[in-house]
Length: 150
Image 1 (cartoon, rainbow, N blue to C red):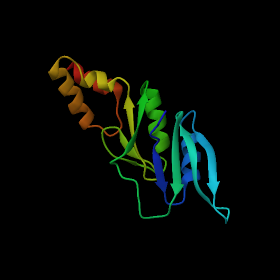
Image 2 (spheres, rainbow, N blue to C red):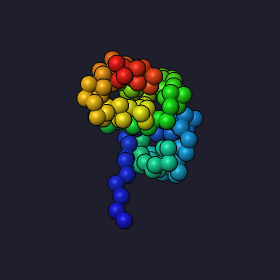
Image 3 (cartoon, rainbow, N blue to C red):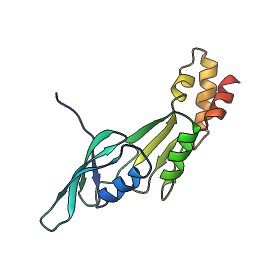
Image 4 (tube, rainbow, N blue to C red):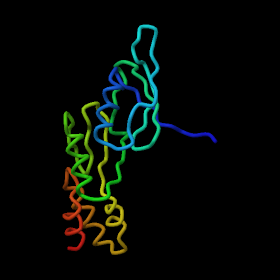
């Protein structure tokens, strides 16, 4: 079966990024590394939350942007807080649950409950949840639910 696998271009810190992420997320780590003739890692395959990624230490010139982000579906506020706080180490909070980590990778740390609130059959309730989300940086499930309830 043919698959599409994400491929990330790092300047030269692929292993550092995967090591950092493996301390944050379960089922994360290097699967294999490819080394050039000088012993430098130039690429590899890693697992992030159980998904396979390929990557390259390709040098500068192709920075990450928020046009591509990694969406983390969180079960509860404890999980949101844990992932958010860990990614904040050297990272930059953005808005609406988005955070850019110290490697320039954009993440969306999102409660599993959010899509339900945003798709509520009552459009006014869904809009209140949306408006509350738009005013947040790190998402707060209790506040989103309070806003939706009116």
